[in-house]
Length: 297
Image (tube, rainbow, N blue to C red; front, side):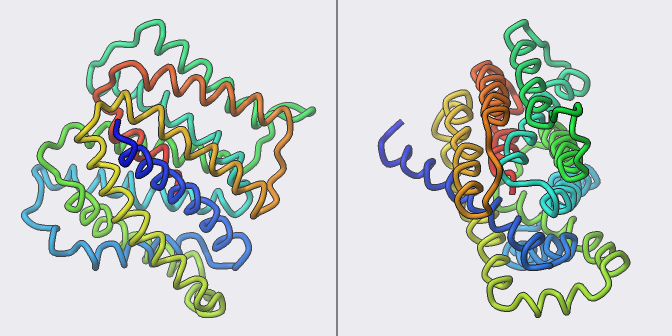
């Protein structure tokens, strides 16, 4: 990999990590309801990528379902989780999306799991359990369980996406935005009264967060990432995207005052080692998976 492309990948990982911190600030510190935040984000994504919406991929129903899973469903659960979960803990727990995707690829795509990938799955799950562990046992934090649910939803969408051919990055973003904005807006209107007022109360920082999330993260960073995937093998790119959770942990400690102790350090090391083992094995769904897992947005 050239030094220029490596620097681009570092920048992408920093953008993804920054998005995690900003999302935490929006839903937990600025009081913006998570479904409303997700709906506004995807409304902007849908508007900016509308020219790439057509012609519709075939089968269209599968593309809509994938868009809902990797977009609205994943981000709704993620942002809801960020209301109580710290970005540092979430960046580790979200790694369970890697074994989820591997197991789903066996069930849906008929892939095989060798012993090394099995070891990677076990280490990743063990690391997540260590992060959720407390002296009283596994900490049943609602926020972290929502993060787990977000990881599963996104992983299912990533595997199903593998069954759709010929979808370009901007067309994929267009369908994620189009498929997600309507159900998110409806759920926010029903479940989050006063959400528009909360957005106005947050002011220009909220507007800047939405623009950063939709334009810089979803459109620019992901498009650049897919370009790297096309130029290099996925099993080279995937391990390097582990910089994202590391950056997230560092930013979380500095910006949102996340608690990070030896237990979380051990859990993070185990989880990231497991992800690394899985990523170094050739995997048909790894490009989509790393995009989903690494951004954590």
